[in-house]
Amino acid sequence: MNAMQTLQQYIDESKRIVFFGGAGVSTESGIKDFRGVDGLYHLKYKYNPETILSRSFFLGHTDEFFEFYQDKIVQPTLNAAPNIAHKTLAKLEDMGKLTAVITQNIDGLHQMAGSRNVLELHGSIHRNYCMNCGEKYSLDAVSNADGIPRCHCGGIIRPDVVLYEEPLDDVVITKTVQAINNADLLIVGGTSLTVYPAAGFLDFYNGSKLVVINLDNTSYDSKAALTISGKIGEVLGHIQL
Ligand code: NAD
Ligand code: ZN
Figure 1 (cartoon, rainbow, N blue to C red):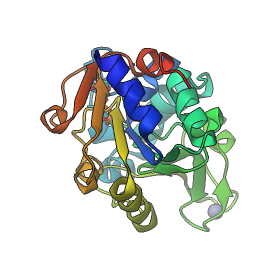
Figure 2: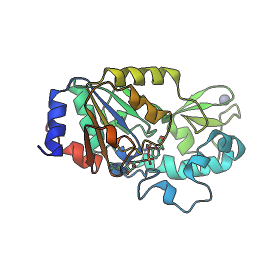
Figure 3: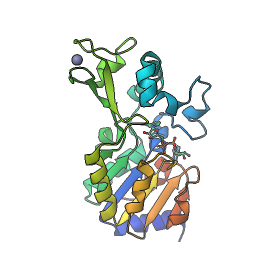
Figure 4: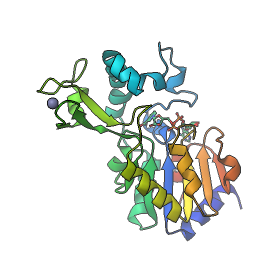
């Protein structure tokens, strides 16, 4: 059996599939990842993305943070639509075969594709709040702002995304661990698995069917029952549902 046939068989026989993904899931929607060949790491920018997207940088250089965030994160996402990977996962959930999509992405494309149980480990650009009065704002408040987005109270509107140096949400962590722990098939894709603690949650998988679909090698390849080197949209697009 070739790798695609094995993946098809795994999906056919599973009832509690969990998908765990990252930025590579959205590259086929036109949003750059960090570490892929075309990723933001390879940009000639004064600071690397992880420095800019850190709490200390946000607090110390708020204007430069928003300049990068607008240009490299918000604007590309405004023009993006879900690809076949997002859509296939939404369909699997509709069929009652997939229990959760766990994502490190902040772009909201899984929900746009119709997925309902999406655990956003790193938050979402679609939720924003005033750091002073707590008022909630949609993405428009940030995408339409010229410079630092401000609340009517004068406070800074920040995205509800987990910056480097900030902790993940406890409720999301608990649900993530439960979903992975109960999964019969765990499909990991489009992630370098280098960002912690997110990548460490994979260790809660007890099953024997860990599948890694990624363009580059990852540190979990050796633990996987199946590794497929390819584009996640192309691979999931070949699955018969
Ligand atoms: P990463 O950039 O570290 O790694 C992406 C991985 O996906 C690479 O190994 C690359 O080879 C692979 N890849 C790229 N395109 C692919 C495709 N079409 N099919 C299969 N594999 C593909 O991303 P990460 O592991 O998610 O970590 C980066 C962090 O940056 C995350 O915390 C995430 O929150 C954030 N981020 C989010 C977005 C987004 O929301 N779309 C975009 C960039 C970064
Ligand atoms: Zn306010």
